[in-house]
Image 1 (tube, one colour):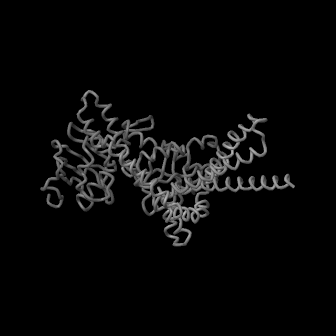
Image 2 (cartoon, rainbow, N blue to C red):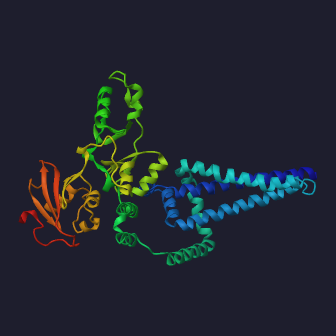
Image 3 (cartoon, rainbow, N blue to C red):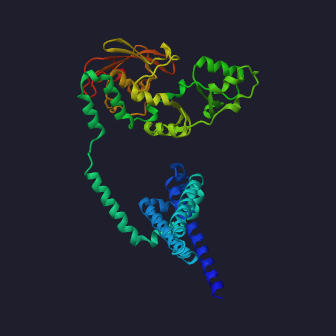
Length: 441
C-alpha cells in the first residue's frame, strides 16, 4: 500500500515538473516573441481593432514592465522545477549510497533540461513563429502584469534610477564635439581625418542620401530572353542586376552575373528566371550603419530602396556604404563617364546633377547643414537647384546661394543633367539676401 502511494506521489511530481517545464518554455518564448516584433507587425495589430490585438498592444505599452513580468514568472517556474526535481531525486536515490549520481542528476541533468527545454528550444521556435506565441501568451502576461504590479513597480523604478545615474556620469561627448575635435587636427593627417569624419557622421546618414536614384538603375525585364539578359550583363559591367516585371516598382528579385556563367551557351529561350535571388528591400530613412549590419548578418550586398508608398526610389550597395568611410572606391569597371564630378579650377567644379548632396558636400568640403535653410525633400544637386528655382531652369541660368554660384550647364525638357559650381569665398553660414531667385536675374 505504501509503495503504491509513493509511486502515485512520484507520478504527480513528474507531471508537475513537466507542466512547469512547459510554462518555462512558454515564458522564454514570449520574451523573444514580444521583443522581436517588427514595426510593420505592430502597425498590423493596430489596424485589427480586435480584443486579442488590443491585449497585445497593452502589453507592449510598457516594455520594462512586460520584461519584468516575464522574468519573474520564468525564474519562479525554474526555481519550482529545481525544488521539485531535488525532492523527487531525494526520494528515488539515496544520497549517502550514490552521492556522485545524485549530484549529477540534481545539478547537471536538471540544469541541462531547463536550459534546453525551457530556454533554447522555445526561443528558436519563437523567432520563427513570434505572432503565434504572442497571441497565445498575451492574455496570461497581461494578467501577470496586473497581479505582479506591487513587485514590478519597485524593480522598474530602481532600474530607471540606475539608468539615469549612469547617464549623468557619462562622458557627454556628442557627434558635434567629435567633429570639432577633428577640425583642429593637423593638416598633415588629411586622409586620416577624412576617414575619421566619415566614421563620426556614419550613423547620421540615411540611405536616401547615398543611393543610386531610380532613373540611373540598370535593371533587366522579367520577360526578356536569355540572349538579351547576357548582353545587358556584359554591357553594364555590374555583378548584380535587379529584375522587374512591367515596371521598376515591381521588383521580382536580383540576378547575379556569376550564376549565368554555367549557362552561357544556352538557347535564347533558356529559363533564366529560375536563377533569381530574393531582393532585399529597405526604406529611404534607414540609417546606413544599421543597413551595414543587416548586410553583414543576411550576407547580401545590394538593397532596393522603397519610398513610403512602396515604390522603388533607388538602390544601395555595400560599396556605397563603405565609400562613406574610406572615400571613393574605383575598380577596373569604373569609367571616366561614370564619375560624377570634374574639377575645372581651384574653385570651380562641373557636377553631374544626379550627385547626392552628401557627396557634393564632401567634394567641395562644405558642412551639410549649410543647406538646411532650403526646405524640401531633395537628395541630389538637381533637386536642390529645383527647390531654389521652382522650375526647370534654362541652360546658362545662374543661382547664388551663400558663397556658392550654380550654373546650369546641361538640361533637357525633364531633367537637369550637369551643373557648374563656383566656391567664391569661405562659407558664411547664412544665405545671401540678393540674387537668390533666378527670376530676379
